[in-house]
Image (tube, rainbow, N blue to C red; front, side, top):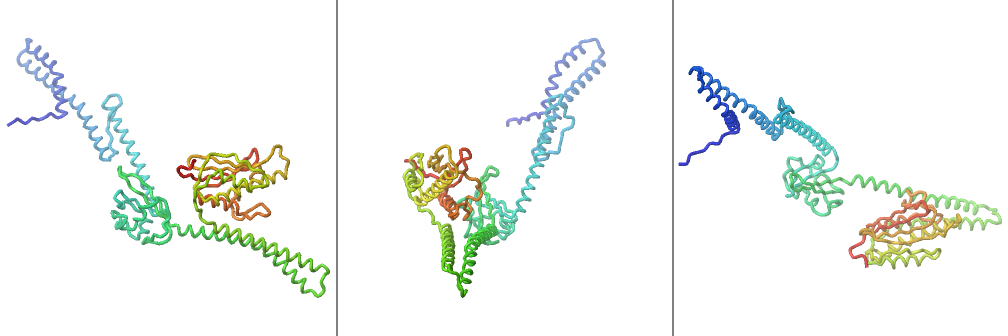
Length: 456
């Protein structure tokens, strides 16, 4: 049978090395001692002293090396177990082993501060999650619920103990894991309530594994509040316009009724009657135009998209303006997938406003250089940008530009820019008006998304 071998431990190895290091000195001392003229008793006594010193030296070396290493092992084991409160005493920076112990002590202090900060941050996060009135769920890659806050428990009408670890489909969250990550859930009913819900889904990783965070907020009350505000604004606008027309109509009608009830009338009473009726007709006509404008704003149809060549569309708009020549600065030959009639109407309104601004400035002052209107377009990334630039007086106040029924023109309806912006936004774009400053004037800039292959 083969003989079993036993490996030496580290401290035994250190002790053996210390013995070997002192062996030459011991051999020399023993040879000198036993080769001298000392008595046998003295030789044995001195030999025992030399051997004792030799073993004591080896034991001392072993203690100096092994104990610091054992201390390091204990400290590192404590750090691995998460106990950051243990420190090594006597860690001195003037020796290598002491320097290592001092660094381990410093590492323990840093880890202790970091864990304290992490615990405080986690406690704060849990408090925020429990207090906010938004349902939060976290599911892992197998659609198993791993985290839910108080609002989420109320939404599902079940405590966390009963829903954690269950599949999302079993607790009514299956619709939140498919489709667009950000959308409004209109036809979804949860056990804890019904209505319209705003849902947002994001991806995160925990332990290297993908998880999904689902946030569900009740939009019913905010939507009702916004709806109430919208109705209040609408009633205020309609009431203002109706009062502006009905008040003079009522006053004039009363005056005409008084005139007709008189037995003796003035010689020009028919002229007064005719003038009053004309005013009533004018105000009624203005009120009818206002209601027609409101109907246009409320009944704007959705765009019917088809390919439209931008150069041809712009030139058609320019040809309609006869009061002032409009310069087409040009741009790339692009085709836009849009409702051509609606986009053309937007450009007609913006060009009309630009021309009226130039005419207004030309009549109010004598400009030093010719004034005009320019239309150009360009491709910016994957978007089309159309700019209508004028040399008019500019924009003094931009906060009311897109307020419905607000206008500074005597014959304006106050819905032109509102309609333009609504049409552009229905196409997924934006409309902004910017004051040019110096030189004076304004720029209306339309940005619309381009589809692939839009450039001809």
